[in-house]
Length: 281
Image (cartoon, rainbow, N blue to C red; front, side, top):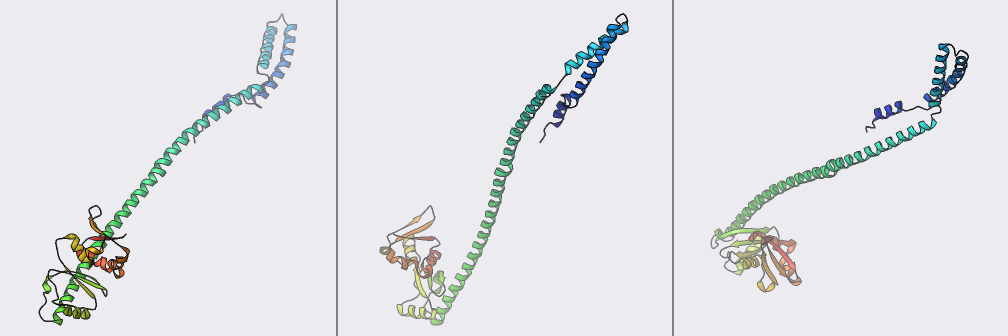
């Protein structure tokens, strides 16, 4: 901090210094007083002589000078008090100034600056995560597409091995599968002509199979995908805000709706290509 040292120094130098000037003046005053007494007596004795009058004038002048300076203690204390007050005012003024500058710096560089830096870094990290999620989503979609294709080919091959003809395998539109648990097949026409052939195929296949007929009614299509009747649910609707189906069911039927490891809901979502929210009421 700039304490205006040069200004204070000049004030000290220009002021009266106790212990130096005062001592000189006092000793000089004492010497001058003695000298002036001698000179004055000499001047009176030699009043006829012009030199005597000159000595008298010098003696009087020195005496006045000694009286004028005298003891400077009070004068020094007053000067010291003034300097102290000035220094205090200067320091207080600089304190207010630096306090304001410090607040401004703290807000710009710490409060606002750090917040801005953290926000920028956070947005950058969020952007990276979003990009990563999009890439993972694309990879997951590709894996699902390949898995679905393989599952369709598997079902077709097993049907061909069971019977050489009699099955319309070309009308399989989509397959949603939780391996070892459940498989749902989206078809236009039924794959099996009777219950016996269906059971035989399921025995070979090793998983439960549900055939879902493609239709234009969204609610019926959803209920078919969940393998439930309309009388088994309390309410069902599509939320335009959340872009998903909401199915409200009683607790007694919730287990059937969810399925083992949520397999019923997961496969239904893949069939209808929409999210499904189950609410137990």
